[in-house]
Length: 78
Image (spheres, rainbow, N blue to C red):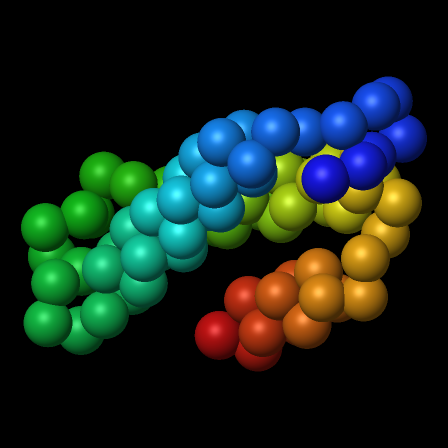
């Protein structure tokens, strides 16, 4: 995949996608009424803003693909 500094390999993209999914699912566990007690020590707001920061950086590097707008807006709505 081309980006503003060159290209990413398929493996790099797969790793980033997997890592972002893990972060999203972790946040979901942190706020789910059935599991949130296990994650009381997690600063949800800091984790959420960190995730948005990472996605925003990815958005910039990938020359602002439209798909990331949906991802960010869905996360904000959740």
